[in-house]
Amino acid sequence: MAETVLEARGLGKRFGGLVAVQDMSLSVARGEILGLIGPNGAGKTTMFDLLAGSVRPSAGSIRLRGKDITSLPPHRRLAAGMGRTFQIPRPFPALTLLENMLLARQHQTGERFWANFTAPRRVAAEEREARDKALALLDLVALHRLADEPARVLSGGQRKLLELARVMMADPGVVLLDEPAAGVNPSLLEVLIDRIRDINAKGVTFLLIEHNIDMVTRLCDRIVVMAQGALLFQGKPDEVAREPRVIEAYLGGAAA
Image (cartoon, rainbow, N blue to C red):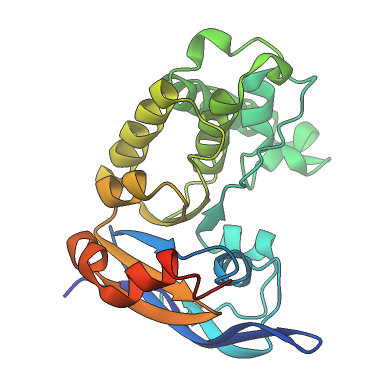
């Protein structure tokens, strides 16, 4: 059995009197692509925000490679090896794609002021390495030709590709993808799906929340379904498609 790299146990979140997530548990195995789906209002976004660290849980715990990260903020989770993308990418529009990529690099010696004077060769070497890595990732997502263009020229789909490349600058072992297909045209969506597969094949684990069921079915090894803030069902894509409770949740308005 594959090692569990990300695990949530009994997660709950209340916003005043509203229970958004209740007693929600899931686990993601190393190298897996796990999908998180559910009808509108099911609690998916809150669950995702809990895992990403942008929302603190009212109950439960989150573990990354066996270590409790429940109280860690997002930047500490990134340092621990878990990155995330956003449903609406927000690159720095006036900066070039390459500059946007370089800003995402973690733990550079040159970030410390005096290191630029005491270890200039090391700083220069790391800068060259970061540039090479950024250009390679831009090439991976078919944006290399735009490396020196400002990010404002990108389409919505290209911004999603840039977002995926940016998160990989931090070398995460686990990536949370927030609705990667939203706003992406069909041709770029195929590129995005292929790039996710390529990165996954190199050992990166993915958890994605997505409304595009076709994309989820094509990409995911397993699917977790939420309704009314709780776990409804989990299984392989074909099992989920046949499950009466899932069909009722989507067609019968269980989470309305």
